[in-house]
Amino acid sequence: MFRYSLFAIRYSRAGFTIIELLVSMTIFLIITSIVVANFRQGSQRDDLQHGALLVASLLQQAQTYALAGRVTADLNQVSQVPPGGYGIYLATASKDKVLFFPDFNGNGLYDSNTETIGGWQYSLAKDVELESLAVSESNEPTVAFTFRPPQGTRYINDTVNGGVLVVILKHTKSLQQYKVTANAISGQVNTVKL
Image (tube, rainbow, N blue to C red):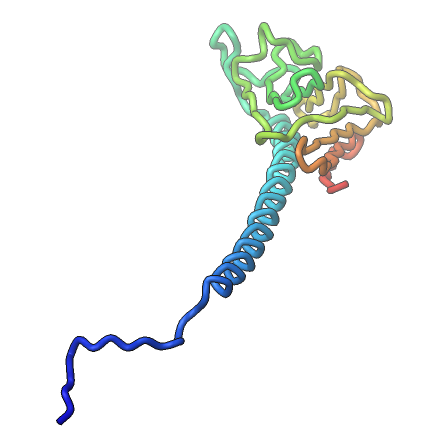
C-alpha cells in the first residue's frame, strides 16, 4: 500500500542559481545607471534652457510694460509711469541673478538705492550662471537694457544705439551654453543653444 503525505517535500532543480541572479542584477544596475545619467543630463539642459528663457521673457516683459505705460509706485509711494521705463540689469559679478527694475530717475541705468521698489530679483537655477555679457561684441561687466515709454525706445547702458546685447549662460557641471540676444534696433529677443 502507498502512503501519501500532505507534507512531502520535493527537491527539484527548478529555479535560479546564484550566478544567474548576480548576472541579471548586474545587467539591471547597468541599465538603471544609464537611465539615471541621462535623466540628470536632461535635467541640467532643462535648467539651462529655463535660465535663457527667463532672461528673454524679462526683456520682453520690460518692453511690454514700457509700451503699455504701466504705472508703478516709487519710493515716495507716488504712482507713475517711470520716466526711464523698465529694464533688466545683469552683472557678471552676481552670476546667478537677473534684476527687473523700473527706471524712476530716467538715467537708463540700474540704481540700487532708488529702483529696488517695484522691481524684482530673479535667481537662475542651481549651477546655471552668467558666463559673459557683450554689447556689440564688446565685453561689459554690467548691462542695463531699458525700454522707455511711450514708444519703447531701447537703451543699453543709457545709450541709444544699434547694438546687440549678447548674454551667454553656462551650466557649470555640464558646461553646456545658451545665448540670449536682444537687438536694440528691432527689440527682437532670441535664444539659441550653443
